[in-house]
View 1 (tube, rainbow, N blue to C red):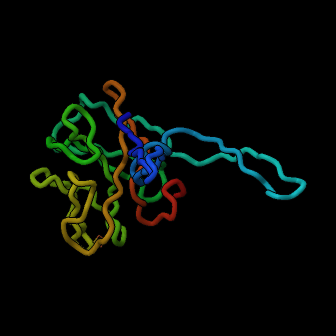
View 2 (cartoon, helix red, strand yellow):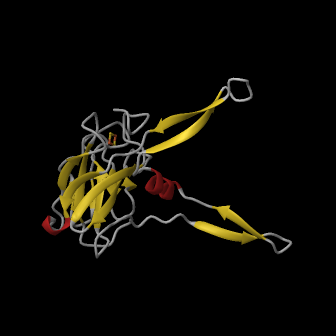
View 3 (cartoon, rainbow, N blue to C red):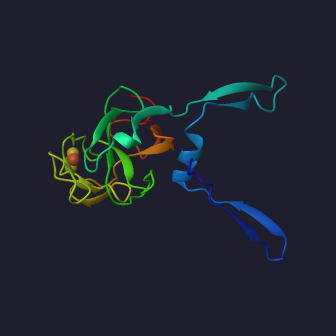
Length: 191
Ligand code: FES
């Protein structure tokens, strides 16, 4: 996995070493969304009945979605993630040019949710290979740049397109998380 924690060490004014953990939201998602975790929480803290209880923390599933060797430039492959619920349709595409969050030898394989962040327009079939973009959205014409984490090129939306975080294991491509909130959900893991 390509995740890194962006941990930077700093020195205090007195010269002693002080560790400061600076973790971006993306890194947090990368490092937190791929494994089931159980944490211990204190119930009724400060009371005689205080006790440590295990609490399951919801995490993203790890789902195999394609094989790298079968992808062709500018030919999107559709898949559902993180579930089969509302707005869970996504596209995986080999752009043929390096992209933010891209995997593979050329860092050009990326995946994005198909639902416009503005008002939920369905953008299936709107990928443009010449500009490496998704859109225009059929409702209000937003277009997203797939080489730069799905930022908006133009249109009515004001949030980037959710990017599916990918992991490469040999020739197998796995979806392991999502950067950004899917339209219509308050939690990506609750359809
Ligand atoms: S729903 Fe896509 S631009 Fe409005």
